[in-house]
Image 1 (cartoon, one colour):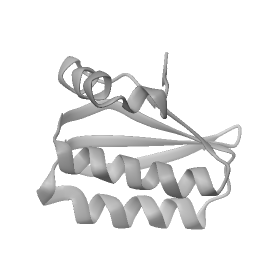
Image 2: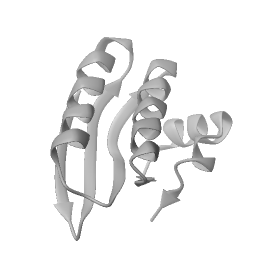
Image 3: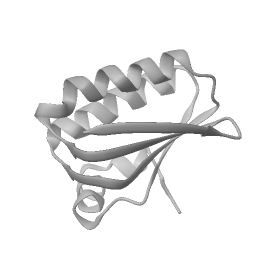
Image 4: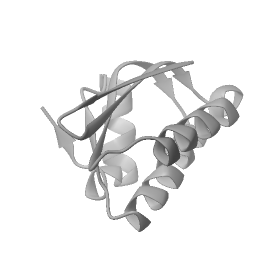
Length: 102
């Protein structure tokens, strides 16, 4: 799992690469919280274009970061999930709290 980011026009874009599963969850949680707490931004986009796999642990990681961002009054979006991750987002209802953008 790799996490890269950039800030464009006050939007924090976080690129998740690899597999977001139980093995990567601690690293992912820690890295995302560090970014959230240290950077200045108005909204977050999780770019999932290079995320190859996500399981229920990954869902928990994203929901946890969503809750933190919600308390900070920040909007959260997802971008370009693959077909498997798209199914997970639809089945779990994640799109209701983190809308997909194009």
